[in-house]
Length: 77
Image (cartoon, rainbow, N blue to C red):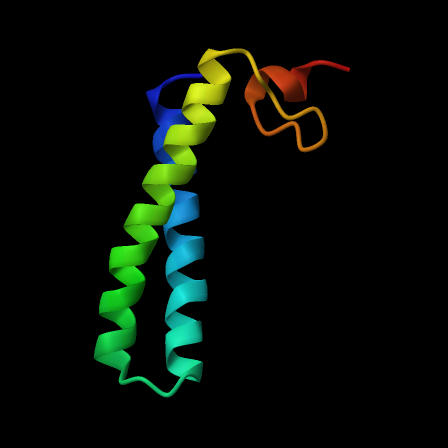
């Protein structure tokens, strides 16, 4: 798993978290600027923690057998 894989994973989590957090803030009745700012802050934190944890698990050889989220696991049958 190269650098491109981890950058792609970070960006996917970043966008997903931004959408979910932003929508939740808007549903709470906050202003769109506030919702976007909070979503940006928390999505960066979320993506960093998630990607860092998965990177650490991958380095230790701990792959998810159910989700097969790494290229090595997808190739195995």
